[in-house]
Structures are given as structure tokens and as C-alpha cells.
Length: 272
Length: 290
Image (cartoon, rainbow over all chains, first blue to last red; front, side):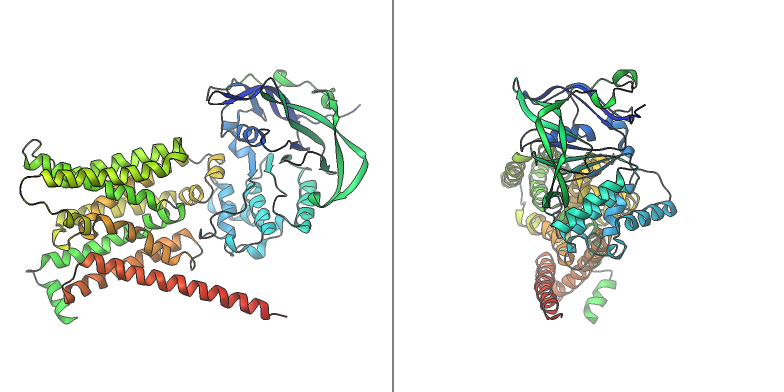
């Protein structure tokens, strides 16, 4: 019997509009626990908007989002987020340690536990030696590691990374994907990228955003062709082809399990 | 120096003591709020609030001297305009970021125009220069008490919420994801700045208050590793500049506000030049490494 991983994120009939301009209507997809899913789509497809909806920074005009059974606004402690931007104000006086500590805000931990979590995060990313450096003094790869450490500090169950390989050299990208491969053993990972042709071999599933249907973007799960692998610098190693011509059925990956509203109670999105 | 110290303890010159105390108490505000304003890059916004204050002062003087609203003091007028302009700019900046620049300039210019107009229509003598450039003779004991109260409230607020202030200033989006009330923090900063600007404008003047909010903190941007370090350092710089400024003004009989800003400006320039030279030296050393 095939064991199917439980669902971590369930998006059902999601619609969203900026003012009166519709961006999505009736988007439905899900992510499985402890899988690395990549969300791909060309620039302007709405990846960042979808990501903001998942993070609870925007509210859907219709439809539901459940993250481990909760609405995004009520589960900030379950989500780790690594933004695309690496280049914050270079004059901002802040150390690596202080940046990572931001990931523990709102956890209610006492100082001793905070320090322990901070040390754990620094060690996991191998950046203990950088902890007292100014964030602005770091290279792009080091900054990305610090931002991942910040996102992981509170040990989230879902990690969302927005274009994590942007502005990184080949070695840093390789290190990043090695880290993600290790991380998905314990965490659900959603990686957002604009590269639509290839995906890292460590990716389990790919969701494609970008086909315009009746003025709004649609989402499809496409097949990863793992029979042909190639070295690609954007993925720091082996990459596989995204077969945009082969659609996977929404529930094909989880035939063995009950999904959707049977698992999670209904939670209606509120109007923006 | 001896004559200055004698004058400080001489009961005949209470204004000098008040000026020194006002400088020390203002330094706390300049250090803490100035650092936050500098790292958030909202100096222009603080500038607009400080200039809009003149509108409130002019309106209050006009209405009180005409006996239309006799209790309407310049302090209340200034507070009203400062808080109003902070709220207007804050809302526009959140709801329509692309209009922020326009609204900042509009509030800045309108506040000044209303102020000049009402001061001109006010019966008796009302010199706009006093409000624009400040006058140490006008610092009252009541204002010192208010400054001290604001200092205490600000220190308590920053002590309690420092990690949230730092996080929302560094990466607002991430702070929102962590559930930090970034909008509340933003408006609190604006309102604290508005009240602080009103309380220090008598001492340093409307035009120069913005310099004291950004220069001491700006002096340290290249040299400190934390926002807290910047706050403490900027407060110290402001305190040194204020006290020495009042002293130089006393012995040279020149306006204290201008001298204080000039001292801070010189320190800022040295810091910038020093920072650039230090960076060049570091690069040179790195190149020479095997």
C-alpha cells in the first residue's frame, strides 16, 4: 500500500482581486507535508500575490486557505518566510544575531530558550562565526543563509522561500539546495521561482501559475520528467525538465487519503 | 567658562539654566526618535510635521489675541497641527505610497503658509523668526517638565517594545508575517515625533529641529552595530552639541539653535569623511593580503 503524506496546505476555490482587477479566480491546489514543492510562473503571473495570500498579508476575496488546518492569519508561528530581497538598507545598524532573533518574535519564549534556539539556528546553517557581524557586511550567499536561519529559528512546519537563488553564486545555490533537501525531511517547503523550464532534482512537485483563463491566472500541477537530468547552475546541481504539456490531476498525488473539506473545517476568506 | 558656570547658578539667569536643561532633555528625544527616523528613512516626513507646526502656532496666536478662543495657546495649536499632519501623512503613506512625496510637500508648504498668514493678521507683534529659529529665552519650566515626561514615556515604550521597533524598521513585511502590529508601531513613531517636535521647537526652532533629529543619528550610521547603540550614541552627541552650543552662544552672543545645529553638522561631516577614509583603508588592506 502506498503511504501518502498528509496535506499541509489546502487552497480551495481561491479568488483575489486588486481593487477591481481580478488576479485569480477559483484556484485550487494543495501541498503535502514534508515535501518540497516549487511554484513556478513567469514574471507578472501573480506568484508574489499568491505567496502574500498564503502568508496572510493579503486576504482572499473568496475561497479558503488552510495551513495545517488553520487560516493564515492565525498560524504565523507555523510559517517561516524567506523573502527575495537581500539588500536591505546597507546603513541599518544590525548584527546577524539580531536579524535571526526577529524570527523568534511573538513566540513567548524566555531569554534562555531564545538564546538556545538562536544558537541552534546559527549552528544548523553553519554561520556561528558571523553572528556578531553587521548584516550589511555579508555576501549575498551569507545573507540568504541568515534569512533562512531567521525563518527557521522558530522551527516552523511550513517554510516559504521567494526566489531563493536570486543574486547567488553557483556554490551558494548548491549549498542552498543541499540544505533544502535536508530540511524537507522535517518541514514542508514551498519554493517560488520565475524559472519555468527546469526544477531542481530535489523538488517533489511543481505547480505552474501563469495560463490566463478568462482574464485571471490559473494554476496547474505539471509533471517533472526525472528520466532526463542535467547540470544547471541555477539549481547548484542536477535539474529536471518541467513537462508543461503533461498535467497531473489535482488529487493524483494523494489518491490514498481523504482530502479537502473532510480534513479541515470550513474557513471562509473575508473580503479585502 | 567660569562666567558661564557662574551664570548657570545665578538666579538672575533662569533662562540659561532652562536652556541647558532643555538641551539635555531634548537629547533623549533626538537620540531615540532621531535613530528610528533615520533607519526608517522618514526624515522628510518629520520635516513636514515640524514645518506644519507653524500653522498651528499662527492660528492659535490669532484666535487667542483676537479673543475668539482666548485659551488657545501656541503650544496647543502646534500640538494640534503636528498630530493632524502626522496622521494625514501616515494614512497617505500607508494607503497610497506613490502619493507620499506629494503629500509631504503639501503639508510642509501649507503649514508654513497658514502660519505666516495668521501671524501677519495677528494683532500686536508676532515675530515668525522666533518660531522658525527658536529662542532659548522662551523655554519655560512648564516646557521642561513636559519634555521630561515625554522622555520618561519614550524610554519606557522603547524598553518594552525595542525588538518590535527594530524588526518593523528593518523588514516590515517579515515583521507582519511574525504578527507584529507594524501599523500601530508606525503611527506611534509618527505621533511621538509630532509631540517631540512641538516641545523642542521653542528651544531649537521649527526649521532646525529636523537637523537635530537626523544629524546625531546619521553621524553614527557607519560606526554602530545596533539601533540601540545608535540611540544611546546619538543622544550623547546631541547632549554634547546642545551644551557646548549654549555655551558658545552665551560667550559670543549668537543664536544658540544655529550654533548647536552647526556643531552637529561638523561632527556629521567628520564622521562621513572618516567613514569613507576608513573604508578605503580596509579595501587597501584587503588588496595587500596574500
